[in-house]
Image 1 (cartoon, rainbow, N blue to C red):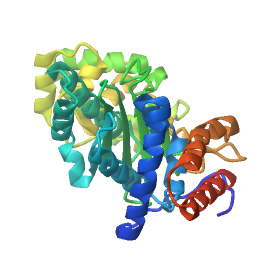
Image 2: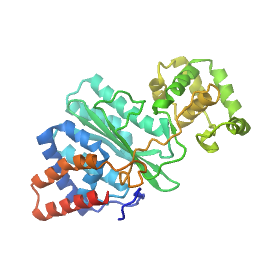
Image 3: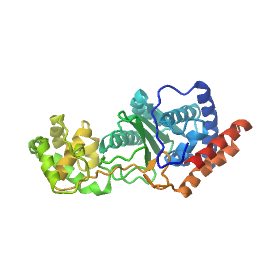
Image 4: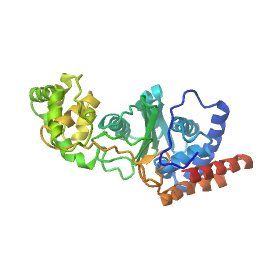
Amino acid sequence: MKRTGFTILPLHRGHAPRWLIYRMENLSKEIIWLIIDEYGTDEVLRRISNPYWFQALGCVLGYDWHSSGLTTVVTGVLKRVLSDENYGIKVAGGKGKASLKTQLEIDKIGEVFNLSSSNIDRLKYASRICAKVDNTAIQAGYPLYHHTFFLTEKGDWSVIQQGMNIQDRTARRYHWLSEDLNSFIVEPHKAIVGDVKRPSVLNMTAKEAEENRKICVDLVKGNPNNLVSSIKRLSNPSTLDLWTQDRVKIASLEGFSMPRNLNWETFKRLYEFQPKNYEELLSFKGVGPSVVRALALISELVYGKQASWKDPVKYSFAFGGKDGVPRPIDKNEMDKAIEILRNALEQAKIGQKDKVQALKRLQRFVTTG
């Protein structure tokens, strides 16, 4: 694979062969156990929330590192490995229908770890709001199809989830970590990894969108009839055309399109609920991408409080490139990210042949990335 600014992450059909999964499970069990034994379960959460390390792990385990399936297969392997023994860390969720079982699985894992009901509720909320942010607050054309929730017996957690763009058949991965997380709303991710930096993305998690978020909350707390009237009035394309004529565009006209199919009852229920902040607004049942987009546009077009239309993707799957897109390669960070993985491999109680092959794959990842 050539060294480039981007590495395409193609969407592949089919399943990883059983012989490969078997070897991935054996090797990952050795790696994870050694990390836990040496550094504790918190370090596992930190490692998987690091896009360099997670991608390197998939490479070491033998999976095609530029495939979108790396995310789903590696997290699936880790889920099975961590469910077999009580390492103090387990995984809920998965791909497709498995992601819908996340809440139930968090309940069961919480019981195994003897967590309090309030702690379990907190973990379930974290799972829901992480998915809501990446599916709704960030609108880049990648609806989620995969959600995994890693949690420890101490109640700490990490999330890896992935969305799919059907049009160009690419994927985007989101990494979260509970450690040092100050807000679910304001730039909360450890990493957002993708193939393409989109020219126009509604990003309601950006710091510069703070005033827009405040207006959104004020809008739903006011008379819902006035809000509905404003949305319907701005649904006229000519209104948007006039607005963009005399100013620098920060997004394409397509980016300013007002949603046409909205559930007006949602605005009435939001008015009755009176959310205290944007997180409560976003987490409210029935608030989806269309509602978030409509409120953001009203806040910007009517009240002049700009949303952010800059793509928040932080890494490409090649983790940057010589052209600095989407960011320059951080060689020091990459070296740190793979150091623990290399040490774990060297100590792993596996056959010499498997160990040598795994180390070679890690070296190829470093030189290619």
